[in-house]
Length: 287
Ligand code: PMP
Image 1: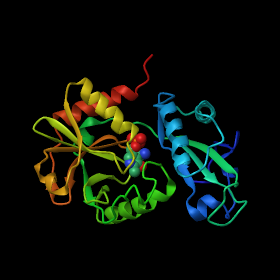
Image 2: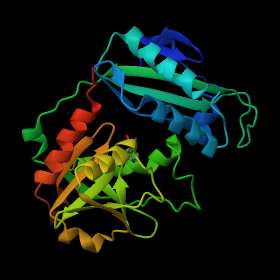
Image 3: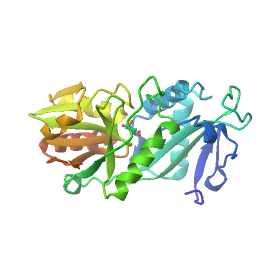
Image 4: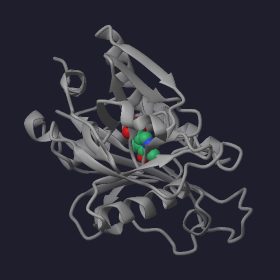
């Protein structure tokens, strides 16, 4: 992924993709002082661009560092990188990390570096294929207790257990894994939030110890606009067998129906389809 043509915004300027390097003694690499964002551009417009920039700065604050660019500057950096890339449908990846001046746990004055990369990511909206649903494994790791980790930060370090869980799931032939939280309640997938439907109502876990995704918030709004009954609440795994439909949400996943979680089966249905289509409409730039 590092030997491509293209441009990456790096500490305030566009540099050739291949030259966007950092030192091996970067604090972010050794101690996980690194945060990032995952965004998408549709038709040349970054969906919820400013909300992502705000979350990016907030994630860093939760890790006790400040991104040395304002929300407006981050927005501009993302748009410049997208424009320079010539792409319209793309993934946008801002990342910020502590630099290499001090190599110890404490590194209060290390330089904070920021980069933005974009790469092609077409939007395949094929409802028929998507409606088949994906299969999820149950993850062994749980989301950490809010007293154990800055769980609302999109911090690189919190993805360690996600990568392990997703690898395990993929080796068993699943698309992803569903993670419980520290109390054993249903939490989220390794890079997406989760929703369930039964008796015409939508249920989703309270985002009290994991990322409250921007897609999650968008889908909750879309459901409300449709007049759907939507409940954010505690969901225990023994309730999974009572749900008829299930879907996950995220910048990458958009709204993706789920057909299976471990021993439980779901039949993606009409409400899921409506929300999938409403979300597709929402991300499409309006003239
Ligand atoms: N949870 C995790 C762990 C994620 O990585 C993501 C993707 N950023 C989400 C939820 C969904 O967040 P969003 O809808 O903002 O992409």
